[in-house]
Length: 159
Image (cartoon, rainbow, N blue to C red; front, side, top):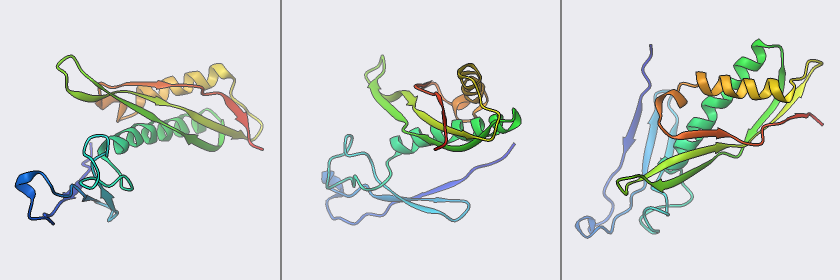
């Protein structure tokens, strides 16, 4: 078991807080020392009270799922003798309303593009099995109720 910490900081910069006219920009600081500038998504809080250039919680959630899946996939591929030369994903999270009318990230679709090196190459069935195992073993996927789908995962040669 382990602990994972993040410190979130926000400070009032406007006299119009009670009117709802204030910046929601804030920072996330992680236990390793990294600080990330964050903001709500402009699809949730309009500009100028959000900043589209910063990371928003919804993007971070999608990235977290994708990152966990990738790290688990890399581990499993290495254990089965498949050398992964690169792994790129354009993950997409969909926000919808649940049965109570509350917004949530209801699905995340991963679109991994994986290049393999060395002599041993996975078949499409091997790769599908690796993705399934990665999803089953990913800490983040095991912590959420959002549907996670791997789409278009096909092996390709590194060029």
